[in-house]
Amino acid sequence: MPANPPSNAAASTTRLEHALKPRQLIMMGLGSAIGAGLFLGSGVGVQLAGPAVLLSYLVAGALVIIVMNALGEMAAAKPTSGAFSVYAGDALGPTAGATVGWLWWVQLVIVIAAEAVGAAGLLATVWPGLSVPMAALAFMLFFTAINLLGVKNFGEFEFWFAILKVVAILGFIAIGVALLMGWLPHAVSPGLSNFTAHGGFAPTGLAGIGAALLVVVFAFGGTEIVAVAAAETEDPERSIARAIRTVAWRILVFYIGSLSVIIAVVPWTSAALKSPFAAVLEAANIPGAAAAITLIAVIALLSALNANLYGASRMMFSLAQRREAPALLGWADRRHVPVFAVLASVLFGFVATVLELLFPDKVLPVLLNIVGSTCLLVWTLSLLSQLVLRRRADAAGVALPFRMAAFPWLTIIALVILAMIFALLLSEADTRLQFLSMVGLTLVIASGSAVARRMRAAPALK
Image (cartoon, rainbow, N blue to C red):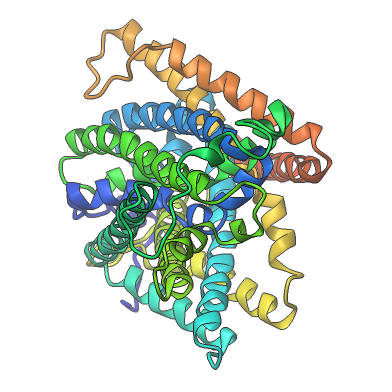
């Protein structure tokens, strides 16, 4: 780390490097949506809605595709590491922009700690002698080093992490199809009876589909990092459009494909859905299935940790560049790495990790409950920003590099879906507190941002 960071004036002119390759951006967008929520959490949705959980995934998938297209339109026109925070500032005012940026940063630094502890805990189930505290801290140190070495290293790690997850899902779907077709020796095909048995396709009705939607929609959280990474990608105008077009349908294929296999093989009433991928592989008599899926889930968590640390550091860098955070955090070294933004982002993760390991299941669940719904608010404000900015561009006759189709109707449909999800959050006792905590946190950040801006403006008024 260089010993002498530049002055505030010099920091404000610092730029990041366009070093990410288009292939890395595409795989980053794909990999960010394929996490532990799919490998371990998909069974929860099946248990809530039965086979009709596919409808929950289709609604959530349609929502994330629209959000990604809206973000892609804005990112192609204005690639910046602040992404949706900058777009919210342009469209809705500086307080909205700063609030979205800080809210997303707080969410990510908490999730980073959860992913380190979760990956270490999963790995300990495969190697019981492993020290969970030491493994969690080792993960934090390793990925901090990766992010400090430059965006090229980060991009390559994320590329190969995503490749591993994609190969695992394709292999899983292939095994599932072979099992259902009766091509596997020593395994009995259940056919497609599980889609209608045990109470029918929608055994818990609309209430179950709605409850599953609350679980499913959070599995797609993280896809917005593509807009952040666009600022450091070669030829961002073309790269972001290509990433949006390819990632969207691939996400649906992987999610709907793997869920269809799980539903067909494992009855929705089965306790084995606690680990749905392992249950399918065990039904196919694949040896070492549980250990293999556990290791893939560890990779998924570590990939998310790496991506979230990158995203958090770039958002903090952007906030500092806009004078919404200390100027030192807006400085980058000779390799264009925002060193202090990386360290600030990982510091909270280290503290939360240590606290969680000292007081198991007491610290992180509370923190995660507070930020659990923030991705939905980020998506909502991103869509509102796109409505405003697209209308401005059309009115001014500006030619956009990438234009979302069916504007403004798709944006409005996505906002309606999000309104329904917020209503569901408020209607359920288990999620109401999460929603209210998110609202409270948002108000605190917005108030703090507005006060800080007035304080900065006060000397100028004098």
